[in-house]
Length: 225
Picture (cartoon, rainbow, N blue to C red):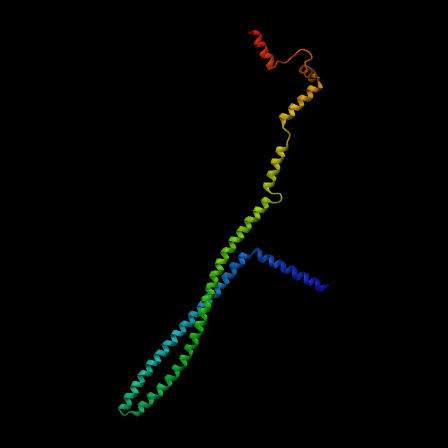
């Protein structure tokens, strides 16, 4: 039983988290983009530091190479001048400088490798952030369309203003015509006072005519002629 309750609670929490992420998806996208930009900025600073160190090491190697070349020239001159002691000292200094230069070249090689890898990472991250920003723009557009569609659905479905207006129009159109209703009332009144019976008998030709017709008017005009 406790296992079942735990599973239900975990499922409910997962659904709540998913719903929360859906509700605030745009805000979460913007936050993740800011985090990615912050990481990219840190990577750029690290890359700049490595490049700066690389240039410093290269200057050291170039300086060592210059000192080695100078000492080699002086050592040769010392040998030519019979000063083997000075030549020996110069040779020892050159050996030490060459060892230092070799160590610094190894450092340069490692720096070159790290700089190349980090530069590729920075380039890839920069492109992905650009894609993310474009995706965020598209996501905002979709979210606006979804909001408009939801509002439209509220207007065209259920108890919407459109449906209410249609219902009101139908009610107005279905109401009784007051003019027709007045005519019916007059007919009812005529039936009640029996005046309609005399009119029907008059139309049938029984008794004197009380109403003139177009034929009666024409007959009178012909009689005058």
